[in-house]
Length: 461
Image (cartoon, rainbow, N blue to C red; front, side, top):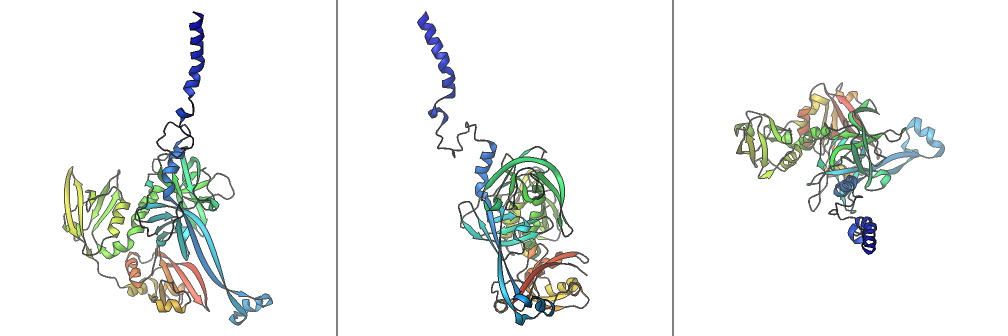
């Protein structure tokens, strides 16, 4: 009997040790990256989200080259008052900044903040594995501090999943990933502190409907993603309160969803005649309007139809739809699978081209100027062979351009949200500008081998 009691006591003592288990029961600690080991209590949702998202977060390195006259010594005053180029020399200064961004679409579209890439001459997108790609600006929205970049990659990228911000909860856990102070792929966590915040950014610019978070955000985080515990993008980190701790702000992802179709498709939308508009509603892509005398209207497409597929490819949101349409040209055929009153239908129609607008006529009537495309020969004469844009050839007296002190020879680099490289590109944008509307223009003035770049806002006539 005593022997049985001793054995029972020994088993009871060993039971807790068996419950904890040995190293072979807990799994190899060297296999920390094994996402299949869901029993590891250290694998929190934050760990899971970071590992799933890290390859979609990028570092954005931007370079701005500034040339200026640098007077020598005591001749400063003379040059200041008499503008004497004889007594000055040209200096070049390169300013490099870093920010963050993330992959929007597999085709190479990247999202970041406008202030990260505005007025930059060169931009590089750098992934965690050190791959680097030159980036072109597709669109910049200064009013909402958003920018879309495009890179060319040999293989499709892995985009982040876009969530929604209309149902965010104060106190909800969020995760910020970015490159603060140049430290790539840094992850911080916190909660949503408040919703619908507004901040002033200077020069009469305010950002509204922002998410406030206490997740640590530092310089270099700008443009990076703010994610929920499901790994869905809910915001784009954009600003911090420099005079406070743990107060950061992010652009709500619903604002990004609303702005993206126009930012992505401005040129195709102005050039191609399709005749329908879409909107995301309840995780589906609905047609909200159809022009009667258009390819879509003549094919029988109706408002309220839901698009299921384009050219046999499933689509669920406006981003997929817009990027697919960017690949289309006049004369191409589109095949849509639509859902109407519970019935699936196939509709096919051909895209046509809109008449080309008179760009200079619109420049004169709206802005009071004439311009022409900068040729490679003209660019070389400026000393900047890569320069692209329009050179202003004439200023109409008493027009908006004259009132802004623009001159013949000034270079027009962008109009509104979009960079301009040719007169045809300007012609696609100008029909969207209304009389009496304020328009932001990026201007570069070249004078005595010195160039100055600035933004001006004109009110159209």
